[in-house]
Length: 278
Image (tube, rainbow, N blue to C red):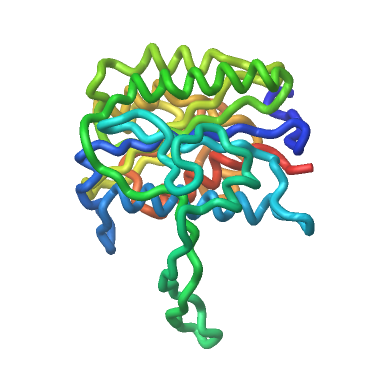
């Protein structure tokens, strides 16, 4: 079956995060606790990198089951890593885990054991900062990811296909990105084609659409474009989505529209559940 290749240190997986860093990312998200969209996205990526590092940690340290790229696109298109990893593209996970730009103290609410919540201080590693400047050159960003994917597949022709997750809040400002998306998703390893997932981070107050199997419920023409650009979820990801209460079918795509912060985190979690690590 496709999308079943073992992910291991000798046959690692590849994640590429494309992060919209346009000026409009200074706008606030909807929801009970509004935050700037740039902060929501950067916090979600930083949290995910922490969780990936923990998931891949063994007694001797973090194993390189994945290589990760975080690409920002706004006034520039390129690596969004800060600190020691600045300017790097695909970085082995052990290097990511060992090189956050800094570690912040954040306040988090946790159960107090009596049915309530209590605030506690937790360490929060930061690899990328919120940035919001310039337009939305999504076509260029997809082209940048295409070059990374092409190189990766040359080096890992039999591995689990690269997963590209695009997080954006608006329409591409450098032309229709559809052709670039089709080109990116046409690359393949022996295990399947590249997976391109899209997430729309909105400041509007309507209900979100999560993992749809058609564009019927999407009233926004740009949302329909992103839907068409998105890959169908492989069976194991559909199974996980269903276990989290989502209605899925064989046509379900990796697309979330009008997402709030909870949807961002959940989307990233589902998008990175490639297979059991070995």
